[in-house]
Length: 558
Ligand code: GLC
Image (cartoon, rainbow, N blue to C red):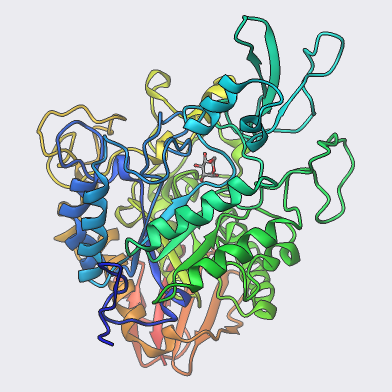
């Protein structure tokens, strides 16, 4: 058969047809609303993405992961899905998505979409039907409806804690206007949790996977993947630690059957369709269970992403990561940020450079110059590690977290914190592409109001301005990704540490390639080498003199 396999009328895999593509792939995350706006309404869309595929090709990515692009009231940026088999009308049409998937494949770029199994939108027909059908109905069994506690039923059925602060249950109103049952939502009330003990729920999601795999999608990112199964007894959370697998709604053992079934669906298809899990778990052994050979292919490495800029912390995390993946034979993933996380340039410039949702506050001071230096060093460090690499849109431009005025914030995390947490919109601001003032080429129409305002000082960060500068963040990313493809040592899966002092993170890949990061306050001498392949420091003359400045990474050929 020709390598350009056609599946049910669609090309399914790019010409390379590499079954192991995902083990070392560079995956670029597109937050559609904020990537590029093709129709000039101030919101990103598929036309915008299609017009910028050449940019992604030049950057050197292997795949794009799209945040949810489905019809949605956008109560949580699209993680409240109304219809899993269509495209949000603000973004385009299903036909256009099919075209986009094919155009990307023509450039050798695969598409990964976001699936959200834990919850749906309260506007989804299933939930609307459940509300209308009333207590005791089969329609309600697809969710977690439950009478309240206490004489009047006005107490919440459980004491479970939301990932978004605030309550996890909302009370419904019966058709006659009286207060009715409660329903469970681990996130916002607009995101009712599905009951994964119900066969309809399982069948529906397997069918959704096939729907997109049939259209040439190369994989799925699984949202909140450790949450979907609940203990049907709805036990109290209590205040004691749970034995692994016995938490009422986190990391329950039954989840593994679901992902085994999904893996079986993926295996029906040509060209390795991958499952990538969003699995937030502290326990490394429990995390690795999701990556057993018949479950997910990879999962995001949040341990690494949340570490501070510290040699011991980063090295510890890299060692833990490699050790926990080894027994299951899965490759690690390396992630510096995503649409939920404070941008690295801002985070690494702060006194506390670790990431924790609970510690986000307005007005936290940052030194952007230092943060940018460190983000450049971190980009090279992560690109040198064995496994797959995720790049969140705009990190390749070195965008800082935008401090948005309260009145424009849309993220429910902000509101549910009582306005204390600035929320996640600061990393979701529309990208600057070109020009001196907003919308910086983001919208086809000049003067368009972008859905979140762009800072007035972003002109030097625009892609066009950076592409002309060999020392820009964009040029650094391009060059790093080119070398990652071309240097054979960087394509392997091995890593050997080099001991170059307490402030230095250094390792060898293969026989002849070394990555050295200086996290300390003073320059350090470089080990003997044949050539400098790439340096994150803009004073390149330093590495020519055999010295690595503070907060920099260099790649050396031995
Ligand atoms: C995941 C997403 C986040 C979303 C949440 C609820 O954590 O990354 O953006 O709000 O799930 O779906």
